[in-house]
Image 1 (cartoon, rainbow, N blue to C red):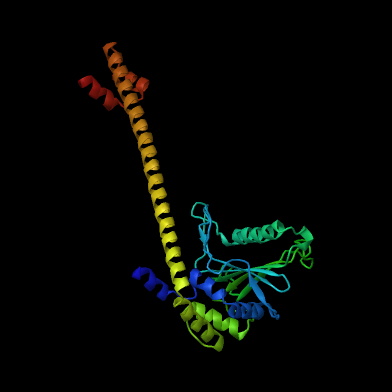
Image 2 (image 1 turned 60 degrees about the vertical axis):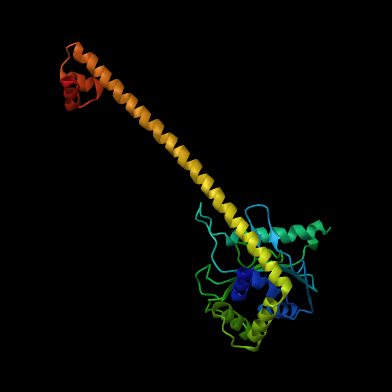
Length: 295
């Protein structure tokens, strides 16, 4: 138990578990959204229980994101990404299609509540990234759907995707957002806002409910790692067995063919054919036929 607690104490805002719990503090999350979108938000509500740890039964594993709606019924999905996830099998980066998946989740959830298509709320999917996914040094990359033939024409489906590059140097952000980026990158407090964030983190780490939730989270993560390791080991054994069978089969075929050629060479020798003719007939070398004759 002590090991789990000490792990929580070492977490910084770049950890997805801690990031989620900080974003669950309404004052902080609301201020971040206002600073990012340059607008005033009357209030926000959370679309999930405070201590929820989202566990999917499929390959998506444990996802720690925050889903929010404001008083104008705009919906937000916030998540932090420390590493740039990639599919090992294909080598393709996963973030672009993850945004598509999250958009589908937001829209499906709204439609399940009885809304028509034209009632779908505006949505923002926001990723805080500790890397520059697009390699252009922008602090913020904002995406909306536009017509390729005329980029002035916007689809206006009110779905926005934002990648926040905490390492960015181009483009303007508010002082509080820049100080938040600095705090995420280096744990440096250089504004009243990041002081508030840091104090909130201390409160969160001392919250027994959060500590219990983190222990549960760690145990689930360990179980998933163990399962993945066991699956990988099983796959490796199966592959090894298959390779061994294939190699054994190939070796057996090769040995069979060699024995057949030797037997053929012996019959031809008994019939009085020359070594050269036998070598041509059996695809053996002259030296091999000579060795068989010597036997």
